[in-house]
Length: 339
Image: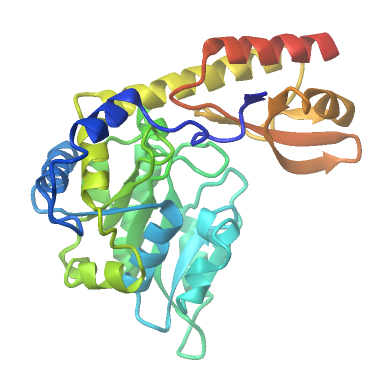
């Protein structure tokens, strides 16, 4: 079966396997106190343009979000997010389980706006309600859309105006960088914290959380440990990010994923099928007749996104750093034969 189910179906980039094999028996101190992790931290600080940044390596996105948000917020404080945000939909209430409410805002294109943040903050007026304290955004969004620099600057402005943290979930940040979104250095100037996603861009596992606001830095390792996120064999994360941050590898891996997705998009559009949204990154959401979807299922893996009407289904197609162009051609040929 050819899979477009997600961007972590494959193991990892060969350079990571080679590095893990080469260092397999060298012996390292645990809990991310090793030289590989420190080197990865330095590489990330340089890429972000913030030598003062604290960098922590964790295993997965939900773990990173839950650990960070629980650490950043007081017990009565809440996080503002788009209705489609990962923390609101696909994290099984992980944030709420830490005692913090997600304040949900409508966002047709998956992107939170400054006006939506102001409205959410204004609706929470006193101590009988939770207190908004953080704005959560994803780059790229859960539907593949992209925040522009101007949009993030607008969010930074409203966060400063209202006294809110700005936190960016970077599970698919590489795809956003490759698509021309704000650079790592720009994120280093705009965000209080963000993470650089590895799991969905060529790593076996791993996310690099970058803390930029000094108020968020103290005792963060205590939070990681308490939340079960401190990996004993932490050098396995460090080695992976050493490889991902080599040269322009991190962005180039995502550039391939984006290119394969855009080829899918162009081919599907040429057959006359619409899309649920205009994604310029590695997630595409075509709307197909139910019969066509059923006919594709035996040979292609994909996720079901929504039912826009009784006769059609919106599916999600995701490409990765390792997607062969032949897989894209095969899907388009099958779709054409069914059209």
